[in-house]
Length: 195
Ligand SMILES: O=C(CO)[C@@H](O)[C@H](O)[C@H](O)[C@H](O)COP(=O)(O)O
Ligand SMILES: [Zn+2]
Image (tube, rainbow, N blue to C red; front, top):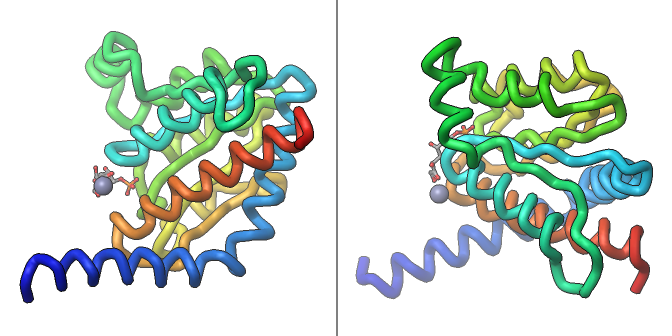
């Protein structure tokens, strides 16, 4: 297979996955955006976490809240739990890597906040621990997952929203997660600022 064929294959797989995800994920995306917009309207905040590419997604989302998405508007309170290397290394060193997000959630989350928990497999222990900690604090979860939802699905409550990408390949799931994040930003802005 030459390079062009290989590239075309990746593009087509990505397009197919997004097409398949559209009908299945649309109601969950709308519900998650409504939950997030209500939270922000009530002066709550949105925390976000994930590993690897999903850490990048958490930061991508929080920067679109704190700075802006497509329209000119005030910054909104979003915080990625993946960025402070002193905090991350000290929690991992003193406690365990599975605690790196949960300990921050216990310190920062309040009743009525939202945690955006991102994991393609649904099996990252530190993300699952963050979900449990968020529940302890009275926060609700928007979970971006893939595969069969992994162990994470069993840690969600009926007040949470899971957006599970119908795919098995990490890269494809990540590509849909980013699209979902942009849909969330778009709907949040529309609900809060109109247009
Ligand atoms: O981006 C990639 C692979 O595409 C990796 O960095 C990937 O995010 C890492 O393997 C993560 O540790 C996977 O964690 P998760 O999505 O299963 O929670
Ligand atoms: Zn990747």
